[in-house]
Length: 132
Image (cartoon, rainbow, N blue to C red; front, side):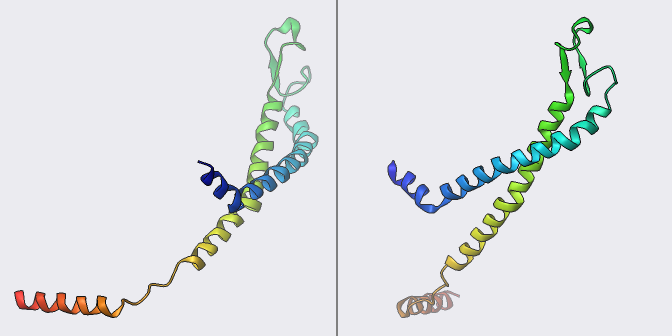
């Protein structure tokens, strides 16, 4: 039971995952700031002047308390997509390429059959010829 966990820890995937999470969360803050400062005003400009952005109130008499702000949801989606895209291209894709290169180097060369195998193959071939 613990052997599988030990193999997982020693493979190095935990370190790579931790680095990706830390850098991804730090980069998420940068992207969030960018989207909030630049994209949110553009999205909110599509809303009417009477509202505080792109969205709608559920109850007109309580417009501020029941306002559903669609720009916040769009911002969260944009932040997620940009962060996921950067993490994929900076961490996941290079790690997959590295794993493929390592895998190619690890595969053993096909070894030539030993003399006894070659002799057995000769006997097999002779027996096939006699049957035919």
